[in-house]
Length: 482
Image (tube, rainbow, N blue to C red; front, side, top):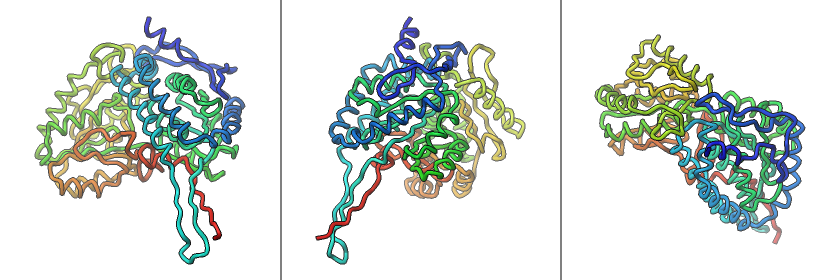
């Protein structure tokens, strides 16, 4: 079968120093649509993780000495290989994570674009030269790789979040140890083979899979030799990692939780707004930090908007991601289903009405249908926590000032969405929103060429764009007497 062949094509050991090796422990990888075990992979302990860091440290001097063009060429090779293997890699992703194959293919293409973007950025790392204001010397400013880096990726975009971190690290001249999420390790393991085929030298990227992330990552942070941590995940875990990184003053990039408001004003094109809401809410089955978590609609258009959105949501086919036409695949695990069920129940208890969906499906696998709630009160739990599921939570507002105030009433600030036909209002609201990214009349903001990241408790630093490579570079000033 194609599925068995796809899984069999992935190495399941630890990738350390350019070599595959077994671990004393293994852990299962489950298919979230069936609950069955797809395979087992290495389950690293602290000693094995330290060996991966040893390999990254040993490879750092020679890798930093390579030319930007060499690093660029390897990334372009990897870009090509990802696209050549898109069907196989997408199937692996769907099997381990659950998203429909169409979305998985899209993620592979998106992931490849990070390699192409940073291949182009590698040859554009620059510095500066100026005369000292008082004369007598010159200032030479140069940029150098920060050094061995720890990269931690989430389960929801298992390939793209890997390339978004690995791409700039390679481009900047940094070696790395990457730890993928325990639920979805196969995509990163497959990527390791892609990078090897692309010509990446041994030890530049090392992959450690583990079911004990704290046991493995804490010693690597406190070791002192790793100089950079890039993490995508929950704010709670991010805060813990920041505390650890403070002990060695380690550079950090943190892409943490979100609570995205989706604002629909009375002058919005409602068909466009519904299209945008579908994209912002249902991408990856709602399991995205950029997902529209709170949909705030002006009262004068709320009935029409809600009716159109509900029609679209209730028509979405539910099923295994490998099945033709499926849009709503399984959630990642049983805990995710229970979380969504609990948040919906809480909202209903506080006065919300269920227009479609609203109950877990009685079938094998971690399925929850596309759901629309209206009249969701601001004190509902889902207005303060990421839903991370296919639930559209709608409430109404009366004025622009109210919409902005409620949108900002959260400790998070990753992304927001605004729908209005007024350019003046659009600029006003976008500037007033406390968010690192805003989609104005568009429901998708992610792009390798754009700086991705949040403010407040949604994170630190940016990934992608012209600033993404700076996260892996140190600026050095050299004073030159003349």
